[in-house]
Length: 195
Image (cartoon, rainbow, N blue to C red):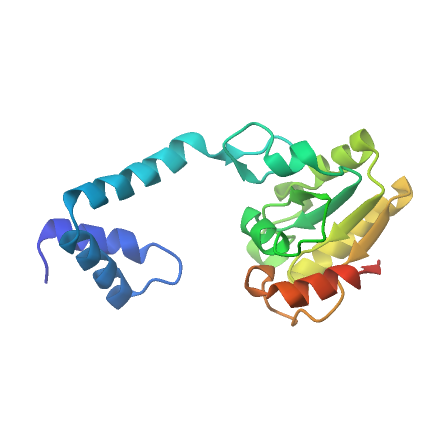
């Protein structure tokens, strides 16, 4: 329907999460209708992110430095375990949390052939022992995989004498932490339960 460069741009926009054909077309036309300078700046921003952003060597969060600002400045004795780096953004809306994070990069999911060795559980256990962690807060999504992962990790941590808590309910079952508002997250964090 469109010339090849426009079709290619539309296809790249369609690869973004939640972007359908119509939205991808609107994005492509936005790029076409704006100045070449804006398009170049947009392209440079994408390349710069790919060149400069890496994973924090401690927690797995996205960072431009080897150790992210959260791990550099916060209490390492409380670790909040999340599934993906984007979940940290949501948890940071809760201004009262002063601990650090640990990104699992997924959950245990037999249906997707993902077991405990396929996510960052060993790294969490090493951190707990090395840093003298006193509490681990399980902030995985409140769905079957998130709950199973939280229970599995809690069983591994209990013999180490670490308090393991789970965010309190209030976050709807089957929802994602990413889409939960900060008031609900703060309440869930404050009312977390030991597991």
